[in-house]
Every structure is written in C-alpha cells, then in structure tokens.
Length: 287
Image (cartoon, rainbow, N blue to C red):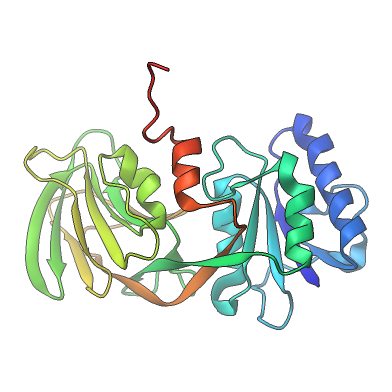
C-alpha cells in the first residue's frame, strides 16, 4: 500500500508523539512518503520527501494527516481532484475532522492495510472571481466567507441565488458553508448543524445588524453571487485557511465543485458519534 503522510510540529513537546507515529508508519508500510513539513523529523529518508505539488491519483492509496483539523484542510489541497482518501490522526485539540485518536492509531492502520474502512465523500465549495484570485486552489472543504477587514464598520453584502436577488446583509460578514463546515465557523455564528451528504449549503450572516436575518439552508446546486456595496472599504475573502483582501468592486460567484474529497472512516467512527463525543451534543449536564 502506497502511503503519503502530512503533518505539522506545532510545539516541541509534541515531537515524541509525532516521532512515535512516524515510527509506526515506517514499521507497517513499505512504501511511505512524507511532505516537506515533516522532513525535520528524524528517520525520514531524503528520497521519501515529497515536493510541494499536488498529488496524482496513481501516486498513493491514501494520505495520512497528522495534526488537527487545520492539517486536514491543508491535506485537502494536496490531494485536490485526485480522489486519494485522507485518514486524519488527531494530534491537535478538538479534532472533529481528524477523528482517529492517537491511542487507536495502531488498530486504525491495521484496518487501513486490510481494506476494512469506508470513505465519506464530502462536498466542497468554490469561489470564482475576476482575475482568479485563488488560482487553481479556489475551493474549500468548510466554507467561503467574506468579512470586513477593519474593526470600525460592518459591510453591506448583496446576495443573489442563480442571479435572482436574495437579500442584503448588513453584517460583519457572510459565511457560505458546506455540511462539513457546518460544525465550524458557521456554527459559532449561529448556523445549524447539517449532516454530510445532504446536498446543502448554509448561508450564515456574521453579527448581522438586522436581527431578523437568520441563517438559511439552500440546495447546493444553486449558484450564489455576492457583491459588496461600493461605499464600503476593502474586505476579505477566505476559503478555509487562505485569505485575500480585495476591493468592493469584486464579485464572487460561489458554487459546488465538480469533485469531492474522501475522508477515511472506520465502522465505529460514525459522524454522530463524533458529534456526541466532540461537541457533547445532547449531553445531559445533570449526570
């Protein structure tokens, strides 16, 4: 089995755990390659270090992401359209997407080797702008957001669905979230939790001036167009962890990508188990 590995060393205290994971991978798999961010870790041979380019379908059978959810988002950009599934190993804090705990890694790798796993295919959202501000990386697993770049005033966002006027939002910004991203930024702004595979987007305003403007769930086959009123200052467009600052003349067209990204899941690692465990969903505080 051909394995690629991506990860980050956030704190030096994490080094022993990360070295333990890499040692386990080297022992179980004969064909293992590592991204450059792991090159500083001992035991990584130079001929196994990958370049910065995207992976191709024939290169690897799986990518193992070691870290938190931010590392998963980086891994999504590495696999791109290739269809290579991602196994997330949680070495961070919450680890909602990187849902395999370090303590269960040995069993998880055995199941991976034996093909005893499922793949959850997740919808991505893309943002198209004049001048292709994000190039070929114009997609996100969690969300596209527009938000103010200064602390002094809100922005005014005009939103259209399939070129028909939807609403004008006076707010700090607006989030267009996938079901995967519904437990992230959108949730913190008051948006609902949407299960993966439900073919929806969520439009969630950030701190709206009009309190009667609530989050809206729409079908993901719609095209959302956003414009910022000309009187507003520069604002920021973010696709997951990458952002650019643009002027109010920028029009953003948001839609579903024509490809999906696969996350490796084992039989006991269900989405709703993760909801209950990580977010204490439905937890009775009286017990």
